[in-house]
Length: 147
Image 1: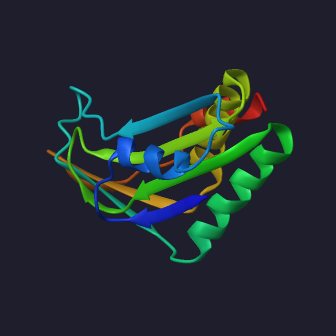
Image 2: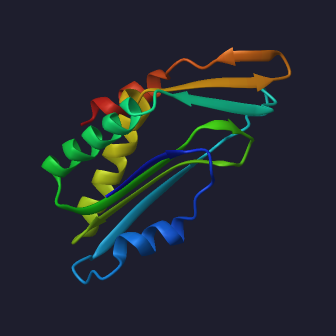
């Protein structure tokens, strides 16, 4: 399992190669990459993500453990970036390995939905109007409720 919180960018192909190294039991990989999105009305200049080191990684570990109790996950990676990010930068990667695609798809979506609501990250956006902290979205809470 790979769980990292880091400032550096990541390479999905490299991460998935590491997860697959020496394995022949994997039938599916489901991966999700989240990006910094600039909405036309906001004119986003940057987004700064902060976290609580140690606590954040433990929270991500618990989310994966919860997913593993629901689906047969063979391995998983979560890489979440912190620091200042610009529009179109990668923020988060979730890759799930399973024997079957349905488990990989479902576990990947579950992990992302819980990550958005339960992981201790704080986001501050800088746009034309200045800096402001971003509240959690009701749509993220609603997505989590499906599980």
